[in-house]
Length: 312
Image 1 (spheres, one colour):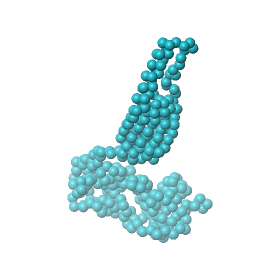
Image 2 (cartoon, helix red, strand yellow):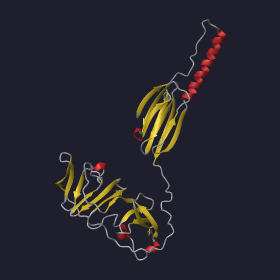
Image 3 (cartoon, rainbow, N blue to C red):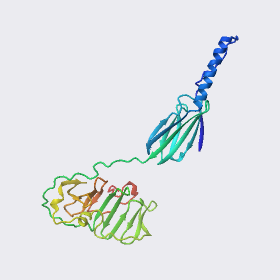
Image 4 (cartoon, rainbow, N blue to C red):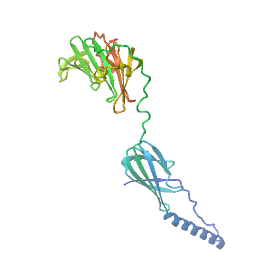
């Protein structure tokens, strides 16, 4: 239990007597005083309890009493909320920080009244809205599909929404390299199994660090996804038209799955590579840099400033 005290501005008038003794006024004052004491006793027996059911991240304001000179607060389950007194301590602002249950007890020291607030914090349940996109009208597919992925001079960066990063694949002749988007200062040389590290003192890259790595091969995800995942016997049942990805006019295929989900593919007609792949309405994996005539390493001076920067 955590406690803190806050004092409010006095709100009870102090009863006083006149300079001269007056029996009638004295009786009236005594009667008023007894009524006041009785009301205090009744109030002291009063215990209020309020329940709040709120979502994670919500903010509420709780006022335990209408009037009170001095308040004591006790909190159980403080790890689930953050709070602060406002309006000179008459109210508490409460923020739901974690799922769980907290209880705040306020005691008015003027009359020993007790008021408590139970805060139940839950995860907000968001009902999915149109999680599966509506399929457009299919069209007759008159093209010829073939998969011819880049094998020599290319620089391709692909967004990875699950890891919130960008994977990059590079090849210039015999030099192959890969960066997973996590190590911002290095590239893995696939062929030699070493890392290229940018070294400010050398103003360049070096491959002096050993690293175990599986070779990329001739294709990689998601560029090979349409080629590997979709039957090609009747592409007209999937084809919904042309759409640009980057500067490429792509075939757009809309493929229904047996489990009711949908996968969409945007495919480069020149080589059959998938430049964008999206499941339902989730964030897609999408090619962000697509250079198939890459001839010079532009790795430095810093990966964070952009590897594919031809101004260097």
